[in-house]
Image (tube, rainbow, N blue to C red):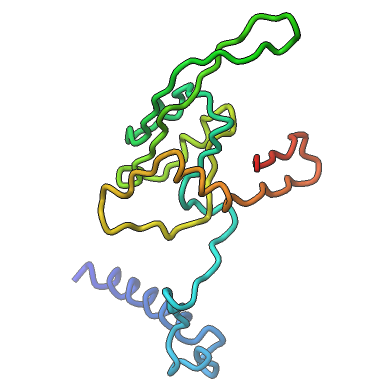
Length: 178
């Protein structure tokens, strides 16, 4: 019997919350047209635009990637596979010696393993990885979720421009390489 006041107090809180939900404007004003039900987007036929900064698929700008392997090392799921080799590039100045640069042979992301945490995008010092708002990339076969560098490069077209910073910010606005 000593628990009865606590139970009644809990029921009172629950009843108040239910009344606020069902009658937000008071007892005389119920939810507008409750007989119509909730407004639901009929997904395959009607598509909502994702919010800005939505995390969809990861895009690769191959020209910026130096095969430094930072993204692959930092990935908690180990879903990024990179293979590269060194090439000789022309010297920066006339009469200089040729430089060695890394070239990508393979850059794959296995989206069946990826948990979309974004560590790879944040850790890339050369702005080679970007988030796209695309969320429709399902496949019938699990093996088709392994996207190679060509497929990741196709997603670059959908990368939105970076948003402006707030007034007074001293950081430069980043630009998406096109």
